[in-house]
Length: 218
Length: 51
Length: 243
Image 1 (cartoon, one colour):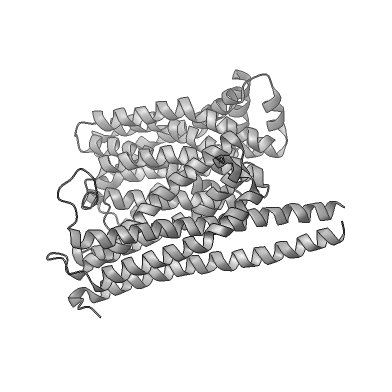
Image 2 (image 1 turned 30 degrees about the horizontal axis):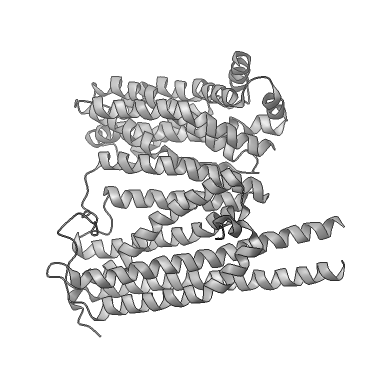
């Protein structure tokens, strides 16, 4: 399993692996926000936490079809499925690799983008914490979506349609933590609920993803 | 016609929109049912003739 | 006594539903006409809402079907996953567009009612928001069915999506509650509350709800028949190509 993890991370980092595309997308979207709503920094600082969360979520979404589609196309997914590791473990590792190569870099650059959107000083810590707690759920849910659509040609748009409604609870609690952090309000309740969702999805959803993948590999 | 007062437009549009949607759904379901039924009959006949 | 699983046989299902459908459709039509005409022409205006109270006869029943339609799909999906009856999977597929239409009706009538009453077409109220999310789930479910060619694979995948989606729909419901306190009044019909809707409005509303339920059943039966026939046709055509 660790070998699969290392392989996936290396593949993603290699040229053409798509590493950095999500980051660049995130950067561009955040640069476009002031163009679309105006440079008023009071307004920007009010919406910064929510917009940053939305941008991170979309950047995550963008890279989801890479989790399984490439392995499906060249047939290595069949080999991995017959390897002596449980399929549940495989999809968990895939989700972890996606999180390491896509979500973690996003989390690390958000403080920089927060400056662009004039995020209040007390907001940085809670923004990063909420993203750290919430993004694993995004990766796991996204892996489920990728497993659902892996057999479909040009399933990218369908993947977004299926995954976005599933992202709603994570986005609500995550953005709420970031917003309350920025407004210096107590964040404990939404943060705990966000953590609960992450724990629940990480624990349970790999079983659904594996079941779906088994159907698709039949 | 009952006296609907100043909200007549709201009430009438909501009835019109809903009934239109329901009728459309029912009509589409019936149309498709009939089409598929006929197509299946054709295919079944062909299958029977060719054994 | 015949077991309910007999109807898992497509032929038996087609026979029985053919016999039931005309009566069911007639019953639905009668109930809907009676309920809606009664509601529209013969109920007084509410003292606060004026004549907009008449929208309730469409709004509440369609919302009821929108939610319970998804519930029916969930049950049908579970039956498919556990007992592998094709009729069950196809019934879930047949119900989805009906449920989606009902969700649209509930949202539209709600918006039209909200414009004069709340002074806005749309508010990010928990109930409204959850219905919008429910609609997105319906769309995703229908799109997934449409995208996959193999019937059994599609049935399996959509069933699992329906299960996972149900959990997330519930989660969203509570998340949205937490996120914004609402404008929407509580459920207007509940067993334990004294201040339910007044009787003049209540009886025609019940008739309308019964009518919507019958309409849902009739449409789902009809569409399930269509799906069964379409599937059988695909199988026959495939066999033709093979020989």
